[in-house]
Structures are given as C-alpha cells and as structure tokens.
Image (cartoon, rainbow, N blue to C red; front, side, top):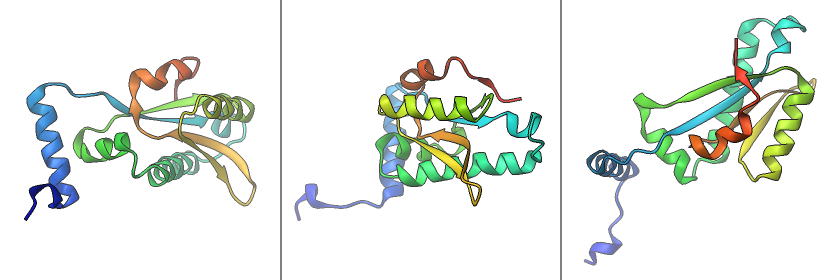
Length: 144
C-alpha cells in the first residue's frame, strides 16, 4: 500500500494540524466579523432577539458558503477558541456600501437579506486572519 494514498478522517487531520500548530508556536489569529445595522434597534424598534437572529443567520450562511476554505476549516477546528467581533453599521446605506467595498476587494462575505421584505440587515465575513480584513472595517464600532 502506498502511504501517500491513505485517506484519514477529517477530525484526525484537524487534530494533527492543531498539534502541529501548537508545537510550532505559530498560531494565526483568525476572526469572523459580523456587522449589524444598529438602526434596526435604535430607530426601527426591532426586538433585540430579532436582530441577534439576523446576525446568527449571516454568520451561519457565510460559513456554509465557504465551508471548504482553508481558513474556515481552521477556524471551525478551534471549537473552544473561536473569535468573533460584532460591529455596528449605522444604517442600510452604510451596510450596503460596505458590502460593495468588500466585493471590490474580493473579501468573501454574506450580506443577509431579511425576507420577505428583502432588506439588508447585517453581513458576516468568512473567517480571515485579523490583519487581512481589519483595515476595511476600521470605521465601524463595536455593536452596542
């Protein structure tokens, strides 16, 4: 049997990769950013639970869409040490402008549209090294 043709279960590959990262001391800081419209709560009086649900939908959708991506797989393998940052966009226009800007820069994300109203409520980026995407998000503050 050729040792190069052996396939291993995914969990074993991830465990090996985690051990290799820990032993080499070179851990990358992967983060998933979620940007939520703050006007949904403060101006449009949406219930907090409904807004949180929008963020959950967007975060789950972008992970699903980019499931095979190596950064996404590494992020998912770190079950107990995942890092998410939730930022606020002041309104629909700023969220849509961010989405357009990210598309231009080839930054993978999911703009979540509430249905049946078809309005953008939030967006989530796939997991990235923090230094790759943070410069595009500097004008957005932590969600309050």
